[in-house]
Length: 246
Image (cartoon, rainbow, N blue to C red; front, top):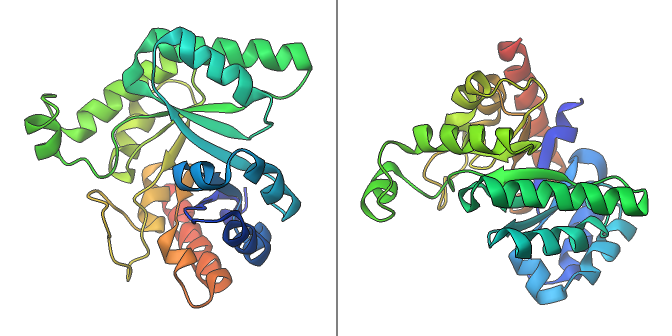
């Protein structure tokens, strides 16, 4: 893959017009456009069609499904008909929920003879530190050990990959036996960028070298004076990481 195709841009913008402008501006300088809560709740599902019209070929629906298996399966059947590239679920929903999501997507895709969305399981949010994990959520161990555990659970349930901090990428890559298991990492910041509300971050080169397949990079691109140049610079940093990884 070209490095730019491995950049996922979160369209965390208040209006669909702003999101479409971002897509029109950046084009194929990023590979995937992520639609999350802010845009979904302000513009609705119709935003997906408008984004495609603006040039978003691959859409990442960041639904973060987390409910009983039957409810998640019903949601996945509807999402599969939206023709998105991937969708997220919470690994902490458990194996039965993850399997229900995958099976529902497969059945719906077969029924309509379409490609099912990839299923990415969210492990530990990058805003969660070890202290928060232990003291607030009462989960023992470190964020890394818990993320690896959830990644192995997701892989055993047939998920296509996980969302995990770049700090967990290498450990997940070593723990999960499936060679095609994808690791998508938020919490990526260019070396000169502010961390914002992310607690566990890496540079693009470091994340790719650690085993990340796709990098979620938002504010350093959308907030740049020249978003295209910013995306291209991040892609160039990823090349360095690819060389280190190889």
